[in-house]
Amino acid sequence: MPPTLTAASAFSRSFAATVALALGFLTVAGVWRDSYWVFRDDPPWTRNGGAASRLLDVEMRLVKPLQIARRKPETLLIGSSVVYRGVDPADVGPAAGRVYNAGISALMAGEIPTLAALAADIGSVRHVVIELDYYMFTALPAPAPINPKLATASGRAEATLSTIFNPKALDNLFGWQFRRTEPGIWHADGYKATPDFDAELTRKITEAQDIAAMRYRPGDLAHLQRALDLLRGRRVTLVVSPMSGAQLRLVVEGGRGLELQAWRRDIAALAARNGIALHDLLSEHPFDDFDPEHGSSRYWLDTLHFKPEVGRWLLGRLGIA
Image (cartoon, rainbow, N blue to C red; front, side):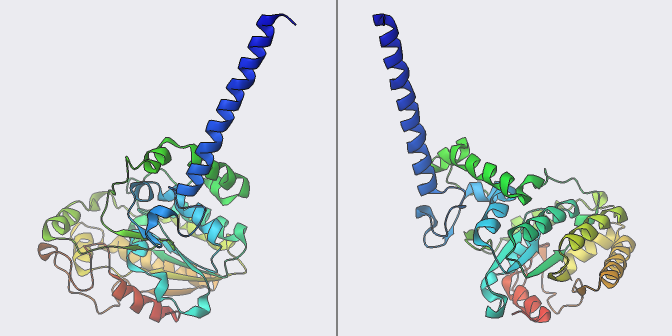
């Protein structure tokens, strides 16, 4: 064999070995660091099962489906940020088994079927609590939805692999992007412990409510029906989330009061048709102590989000506290 070919062959083997070694190192380092928190309960950066992470704040539509599949809960709590901030799985009774909080920021009705399909696919889930907010069924502009592929084993495998080689994970691995974007500490079960907000922040959150865009879309109820169809054979509980008096006033004063009432009636009718337990707690609660001019109250973080004390009451109403 000519010397040039021998040298080229040796270089190719050396280059391939170097690439393989580099990929192997990144894989081991990525799994060990587990920046997306999808391989084990206590990666080294989580400080014993709780941590702040920019990735978890902005990538929860990827992270949470993968965590659900790994943890294989028996009880699944589905909802928006109201759920992940206000309902602590630690407050659920032991009869519920392993509990996971699948609350996702600004979750919309069209995303609920994907989470239902995921619950059906992993096979461990016996009870699904779906907490509903009015805005989920409105024309409010929504973020990019959960990828439906995450409801399949092959889609999750592909997504899990992507978390290892994603540049964002490498940033987190080396600590460059460890900052969080929102206050609070994530727990391995999907719950986020959130500190009180000052008056400046609660005023901003209140003023940011786009009531004009919250036009009720009755057709979106079909998404919820699809989710219930996917969950046949499992216990399902529907909850209409408690709403603060401040938020209710915004909705009514913004001209959406009649639509809100129509939505509640439609949810009740859908639950009755499906033989599903419904707890409409929107205004049927004793926790009206919030004023956005004074920051977080005893029961509310802000206009939208209640605190775990209200969450414990809610779980009690469901009979699973």
